[in-house]
Image (cartoon, rainbow, N blue to C red; front, side, top):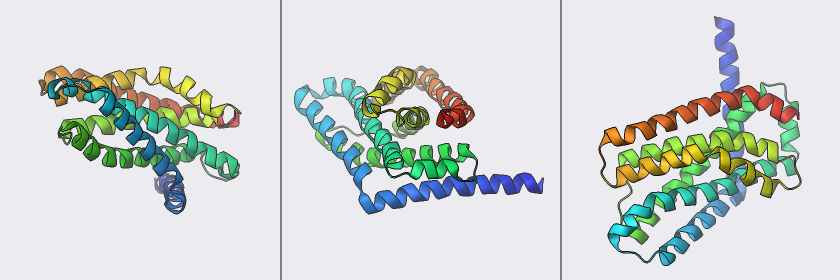
Length: 231
């Protein structure tokens, strides 16, 4: 029992050490989060001027615009996150370290998840201002949390695969977008339901799909990460 607790404690220490490394490196360079934010804001501006709709019509496209913003900015962040590790030789160092490699996956996933949430924290109030719509709805925030978790859970494992290729910037979106269709559809539908004040019974199935997606793909990524980085 004591050995199991000690092993779990060591695993968590490695996970949080990787998260701290990524956050500290980003705090010094501010390359990743600034790129994601600029990209996200550009998408919002483009939709804001392209969709010159009345207030009611804008409310119907809000969920789609939001998730298009998170998806494109998140893809940029995932690509950059793994590319920096590869280019600086840090990825090889992590893989050679005498630690459980799944801890590396969880550390990178958690760091990417934090970056996604930071982007959402800045994007939501700006979107509310430009579109004159309150987005600080508890249900919507829950959907963003679950959707972002599923996105980075899959994105991190696929970014680990794509980073080995010379065409990684093109390869990651090709691999990622077909796989995340279920989470995007569920997130858009659930977000739209909360924004339009639908009954919870109508939204519950989409939330259940998000939770199931998160659990399944985190478990699958946990099992295959070791083989992915070996290749």
